[in-house]
Length: 413
Image 1 (cartoon, rainbow, N blue to C red):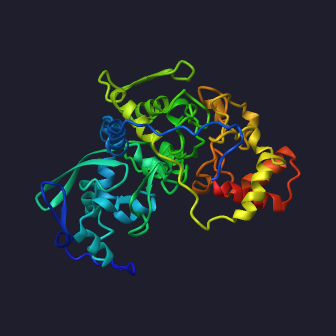
Image 2 (image 1 turned 180 degrees about the vertical axis):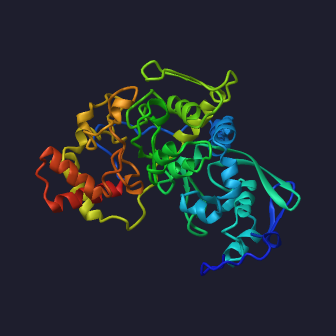
């Protein structure tokens, strides 16, 4: 397509050439509460962190068994998923792996964005964030032989520095543009009713229990940064470290080869294979995630004077500090809370009721400016909406000005 949206197909092979090494030659703050708690340090083992970085970005744990063999997603991508569709469902492209010639062709509008062959070329480059593919050239045509997903699919995005959807990776940032359900609904292996359920989830949401209990009520995809020192890292505080949830997701959601066991869950044991590709990767993966700090609020993105007033409200009248305490802005390491503590409850089905704990963790607040919408169901579009909801539900007596000041403080964290 050209920059004005018109087709400029010609011969895609004129713009795309592939080598054996899979390269394209041409064409294409504030401190927290007042507990005095020391901020935790990021992991110091740089080798382990780097191993985890590679796992986070590129490891499928053998989940091609699910995405290729079972769901046959490689067939859909080969025939249907153009770059235009990929961007529409929130997939991102890592600009750092694109050859300069391809960047120039993209900037000139000379890359066919309505051709699935272009998608396969990007997959061959390992440029599509969160997807790992085996692409082979057969004659003049690219063939997608297998497709798997990685942690980065949901928990990375890009900074759009090259173009919308194309830029440098932002690992740990929730991809709230990603429509996982719509992607999965394209599977030819699913019946129409199941496809409809997946298609109903919407962007930035995912239901990590649907294939466990058969209910469907997706939660927003959470960020994977700012977790150092926090033992309860999910909305419902399942497990005592990130490795617990990484194993759960790798095995039960991604379809990786390994096993998961928690007797508190409706289905206590999941075993995808006697071969375990998950366990050896968990230490490094956790180390990398713990190294990801929450992003600081951009300069000029909040009113500092109003934020100062909001901090006083946070620690006083608004009562936020009762749970969002310490330098981590959460009491999760000390306690969990009943369903009535959630501003998204009562809901059917209850998000907590479908979890191992049946309770909720207090969400940390650093980086809150970045990952709207809020609450686990995404029902608060803005931080002002968060303050207004708490004010109404808890009878806090906050004025509209108070709520605005409180939001400015939250935006500063």
